[in-house]
Image (cartoon, rainbow, N blue to C red; front, top):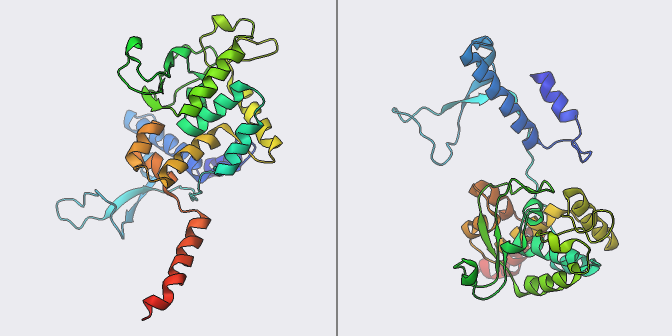
Length: 299
C-alpha cells in the first residue's frame, strides 16, 4: 500500500500535474474500503484490513463528535496511509479580467457561454447539456409550465446528451439569470440561425463552423475555446475557473453560504466552504485597518 501511495503521488494527472493530496487520499480511501469489504467477505485475511488503520487520540473533538457513554472516549481509528492536503484558494478572475475575457470572445456563442459560466456559476457539463427549452427568459414562464418568475434557466440531468455532457450533481435546479445573459442569448440565436443544421439541434451551444457545424459543442472544443480566449488577454482561463469566479463573487458580495450552495448545486456545504477563503488582499486590508486604529486603541 505504501508503494501504491507513492505510485499515485508520482503519476501525473491528465493535465500533466502531480495529483493533489486530496485526490491521493480519495484513491486510498476507495482501495482501503474495498480491502475491508474483501476481508468481511473472506477474500483476504482480516489482518490485512486491520493494518490499514490505527488508533489515534483526538486532542480536539470536532463538532458533532460522539464521545461514547463514558464521555471520555476520544480515540478513533484513523487510516495509516494519508497524504498531506494543502488547501489552496480556487483560481478566479478579477472583475477587470472577466470583462477582458468576455470582450475578447469573437462570437456571440462564446460571449454567451462565458457569461453563463461566470454569472450563473454552471459547471461546463451543465452548460453544454442545456437545451433551448431550459432557457426561460421572459418575466412570466407559466405558459411553459413553469411557475418561477423572472429570467432563469433549468439545469436538468440527462443521460442522452450526444456530446457526453453530464450534470455532476444528478439533481435538477433553477438558476436566475441577469439581463446581460438574456441580451447575449438573443444575439446568439441570431448567430446560430445562420448555421446549417442548427434548426434541427435543440442544444444551446453548438459548433458554428467546420465539419461538425450544427452539432452540440463538446468538452474538448469548449476547453480549447476558453483557453484560446484567455491567451488573447494574456491570462490563464479555464472553464471551471469561471464557476470559481462566480462563487467567490457571490460570497464576497455578502450572499449567504447556503444560498450559494443552492446556486452551485452542491450536495454538501463542505464543497461551498472552499470559497470562504481569505485572499492576500483581505489579509493586508485587515492589518492595515488595525494599524490605522492603533493610536486610538492605545488610548
